[in-house]
Image (cartoon, rainbow, N blue to C red):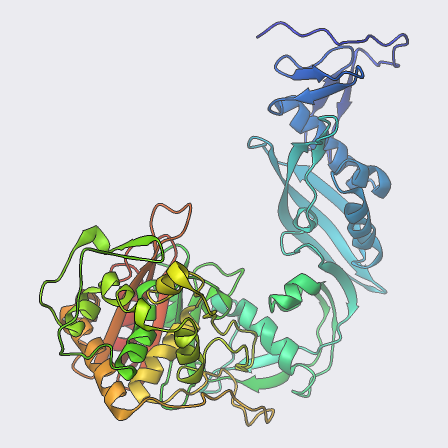
Amino acid sequence: MGKRRRVAERRKTRPAVLGGMIAVVVGGAGFGVYALYGGAAADERTDTTAGHRTVRTGPLTAAEVRTASARFLTAWQQGRVTEAAAATDDPSAAGKLLTGYAKDARLKDVKLTPGKAKGATVPFSVKATVAYRKLSKPLTYGSSLTVVRRTSDGEPLVDWHSAVLHPDLRDGDRLVTGESGTPPVKALDRDGGELTAAEYPSLGTVLDGLREKYGKEAGGSAGVELRVVRGKAAKAAKQSDKTLVELSKGTPGTVKTTLSPALQAAAEQQVDKRARASVVVLRPSTGEILAVANSGHGFNTAFQGSLAPGSTMKVITSSLLIEKGLAAADKPHPCPKTFTYGGWKFHNDDDFQIKGGTFKASFARSCNTAFISQAKKLKNDDLTKQAQQVFGLSMNNWSIGVPTFDGSVPVQSAAQMAASLIGQGGVRMNPLNMASVAATVQSGTFRQPYLVSPSVDHRTLATAPRTMSARTVSQLRELMRYTAAYGTAAEAMAGLGSDSGAKTGSAEVDGQKKPNGWFTAYKGDLAAAGVVQAGGHGGDTAGPIVAKLLKLGS
């Protein structure tokens, strides 16, 4: 314990003190907070400005965290909105949302119970009652807050974000209780069985999307519920409103999907074996989506993720090089240890090289420099046009029945353009996009994936302006077959037969010790792709997930 520093200027009058300290208890949870008057905490530092203003600095003490969090939670629980908002670093935003908590969300009898702080973060549980007219239901959930210092004076305050109020809220979202504007839907699989989030946890966000899209068209009637109403930012990210509590059931309409119950169940089981895994299975001949699963259920990475696809992007790049006469499956192709372009020095994994090898050998072993070496012969927009015109990507026009991210292949130059050839740079994809890439190779034609038949609502599916030549398609299939049999995908694809093909990928991400592992493949009239974030090489991580589903479905 160090000596306490003297406060620069003593007060001439002392505040009223009860027994020398103040105790705050929230929700009867025994969360005691003690703030001594007349001195700073033992390990707290103060800096004095030229104007004799004391600014607290240094790490937050445990006492400061307890005091600041208790001040906020106590005021919130007791309905003192202005006081609770003032205990945050954004009183205006906090006050607006806290006011809506009672007024719009119709939540009363709020009880907040703090847990044990972890550093400056305090978890807490919430118990409340949702009351609307003569209807009421209990609501329980967990959340957390983080205490920070205010820059101007070092005052400990709650770092305000909407998620403090409820973890499903994003900044700009609201909680609302009332008659829902959108009737519920009963989603069916392709065999007519009901799809529920209880049985298929990955489908929670999918079912929300189906309701938002088809609720009014499917013939149901709305009920009364507490729901998250998305703001502009979440809407822009294609996030759907979410039901939290249903006070009275509406009459659901029925929406039939293309999902296979057997493949969906298997996909759920496969992704649960790894953290942050996602997978999509579809039928190349029609575009029907047969399964979609994520090991994390709060965000649909499989449909809406935006991640660098790594070397799986080489499928698209290979089609471009073949069409331009810059590569051919069985012709010699350079694969040096490194290649410099645009001021960047690009490497292969472990700086391997293939001397006197073919393009097929470079593709199968995923040689980066085999692709980077061709950058100087390409225009900046060549890859973008290939992705859009042949594979139907990066045009933001897919309409599968729920929100999706349709891939992004921006026009880039110099080193960034070269990096995009191997799925880095500004290129972004998700498993739905990469499953579609494999499906396009398998069938020879892009067919927009869909979850709900376009005949249900007469919507128009996206198309690609042109198809690859038969020669290009044949060579792409040869590249992917060879990779599945003898390349980086061989172990995962073992036993799947000659009518299969695959490509692995690893995408480096800043701040991650391990890369994201990617895998895209086809077998007969099935195509699938998956990613395991921070998992390592695609053949070892996403590969077994994809291969298992292709085996099951074939």
